[in-house]
Amino acid sequence: MTAVAGPHQRSELEQAVHAAVEQRQRFSAWPAVLRQAYHDEQEDGARQELRHQQAIGLGVTLLSSGLDWVAIPHMASQGLVLRLALIVPFALMVIVLAPRMKLWHLKLATTYTLVAFAGLVMFLASHGDPATATRYTMATSFLLGMGVLLLPYRDFELAMFAGLFTAVTIIAGLWPNPIPSFLIIEHIVLTALVAGGTLVIALRTGELRRRAFLFGLRDSFAQAELEQNVRILRELSESDVLTGLPNRRAFRSTFDSRFMHDRRGPDEAVTVMMIDLDHFKSFNDRHGHQAGDRALRAVGLCLEECFSGSRGAIARFGGEEFIAAFTSTSIHEAERTGEQVRAAIGALQVTVRHNASVPLSASIGIASTGPGAVVDLGELTARADRALYRAKREGRNRVVVSERIELRVDRLAS
Image (cartoon, rainbow, N blue to C red; front, side):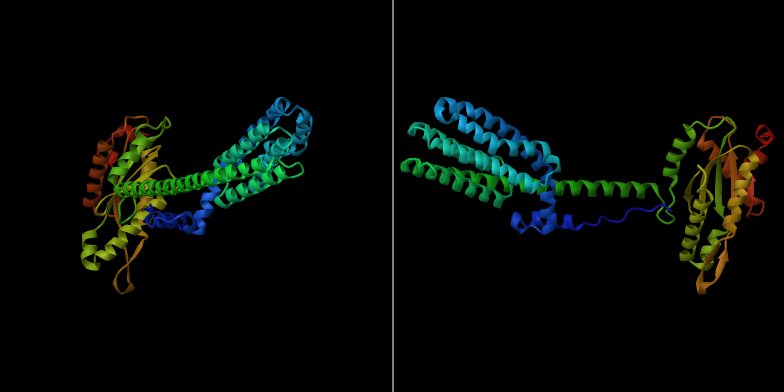
């Protein structure tokens, strides 16, 4: 029996999304399942972003050695060696191994390369004249700002990065070769301003990014719910609510797709079978409509079993009447199928009042095309209906073949 999908059930994550949207929750108030979903969604992007940033940082690290030859030539060689020893290996490791590294390892390596580079710049600045030192220290502040704005870190990770970066640059400016005190003060003030300003911007941007994730997730859930509702409506419009079988509209569509345009074998004909329960009005009057509904459901299941192993199509035609279509190679084969269906329905026992069981019977009319003939469902249905009417007139509980009563000798001969 065709199962119609039930009403949409919201998952824990979906409930969390709707609650966060309706209550305008900040990220810190999101349920754990929603925060985890956000972090999982960000992880792949963060991995790629860190790898990309390391590649850019490696290029900047090597190219900046050229500035040393211009600004502080006496320290250029030492600066290059320190870059190659302290920074380049870690940057290469991240670029090569990023797909296999844990995300927090990537973040740790990226933090190290940036902080080490800034500390090295401050160390080199301490060996230059005041103008050179000023430019170098300002460069570290600029690097800090770029890092805070661009690194795909969580909020507390950005704050820790900014604090570590500031501390290392100050230490490198004071030891082992101190920078003039006024430059250190200037560096501290500028770094504090840059760190504070960019952190505010980064935190605001992160909040907006999380809100966008939240609304995007809500929209995806809404789209999925809409699609499910559309499927439910389609199933309801194409199925019989009582039996779960396709209705006449769905049967027509199935018939067209399977028998009108399908390539049948040269010896295959299309057969339509009309099935009508005998004395069903009397059954309802005697045993009640609930028993009648049970009878119709039982017949629907019976027909599904009868045609489950074939390429047939079945439907509830209306009231106590059903329709089936299948391929057959001869009128005798189609008739045997009809007798099997009649016997299967006759074997059913329907429970009525006081737990009594009542048997059913059905009259069946069959009509077929010739092998390879043009198929017309309306014409086949009309002929099968006339055969069904003959079965009723002749005493019910029998199978009548249209070809026999209409003397279609070409079909009988096969």
